[in-house]
Image (cartoon, rainbow, N blue to C red; front, side, top):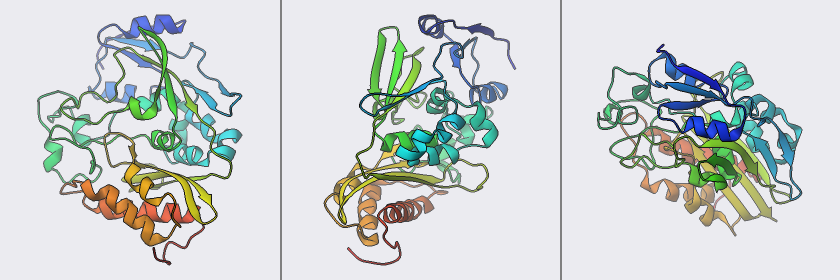
Length: 333
């Protein structure tokens, strides 16, 4: 590992000032950053430790919003009774990510900003436009199973690895950040970006911005939620595909539905076309499958991941039907 400097920031303003220096990185749980430093993907000259900033608390606001500090550990958030009762989709997503040991160290802020697990990004002997802009993207011609089928570009086909972020996308969460302009909040959907011609950028945050926490709005009374994930190893693995669903029924009809997909794009993918086709209609397997098929109409699978189109369709159909107490193998639209 290369030499680097280490500073433990005593307050948020100092953290932002230090992180704004060139070649500086913020350090929370370190479960992703330190691994990438060991293999030479990340090469910071300064690590800014954020663990003394007092961002490890959770509180419920007057309107029911759950405010989660950026330093809250993934394991603690997953086991919090407020989360388990009000938003099981978030608890389920967290518990499906990584191993128990990693969840005990990983933080909310770090989870949101973790980097892709594309094997070409993590292999410094290979070209990668995300790691080294302009060097190329051999992943596009590979048979790697994990790559994107939605929203990719000629420059990058990597996927975002966070399970938690997929659940937060379905929960319409927002992120609070500090940067050189002050403190502000932005929707989770505005945090992430598609690769386009700047794949080296994972988010829309300015360099040095500090994630302070996440606000999770209360769900409507009667809303149901759930998270499902398909991976190669049940004990530990990133999503080949995942889905987070929040469903509100009016009788047997869909009053509101939110569907977010993981493992298919450079960011959590909100399936808004499918959502619009389901609202106002009774849930049946055929109707859900038809709606998600429209969402996936623009999918561009590669040689190794064409199976994801059918996988996502079945995953979404079974999850929505389960939440609606509908047999996923029966019924018709």
